[in-house]
Image 1 (cartoon, rainbow, N blue to C red):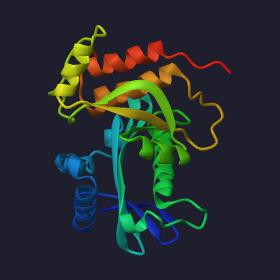
Image 2 (tube, rainbow, N blue to C red; image 1 turned 135 degrees about the vertical axis):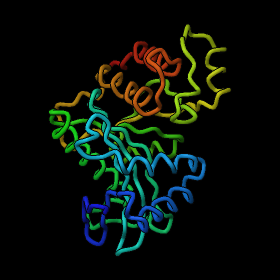
Image 3 (cartoon, one colour; image 1 turned 90 degrees about the vertical axis):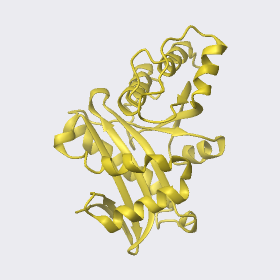
Length: 251
């Protein structure tokens, strides 16, 4: 059955297992209602609940249902990829009626959930990656949502990033020489330009947010391990090229 991962007042964070039928359906209801454009990922979420724990240490999956006073309030899904030592934030959805709910410490519910996800990934990194910390990446569709996430601690990565149309790896294109036609071909397959950011662990002054190697590990984890693309994938090559071209602004 599902495991309680965290409790904050009347909030309970459950890591779901597939045999917890009631909570699984509550999570799916939230996901479909609030993220209908990704409804085709429901089967992926169900499968993800079976890919956690030490047997799946190379690529751990977490699917959460958050209840408030025993009633479904929000869901979240995220992953830890050991070979890149990277966390991937995939989904977070909060019922509209609770988006103005604020914890006693002043955090909105979404902020508290994101913090809990980052904390859980630190446990994964220490237990399975033998490293003291990791970051959690995040794909963001809109400028408005990016601004909100930045108030919750997200750091935008200044690169060119395209979200693939699904996680099958079947809509992959190889090679990139820098032409507009190559970009257009990606977009024709359903790739969408997005912001890419990361949530650093709290109070970690050792992390360099401008570490290009960290950025490379993050995009590899997304494209290769989550989206199942190849190492010479055009989307990945575009992202890597933009990392090489990045020039930090002078102080």
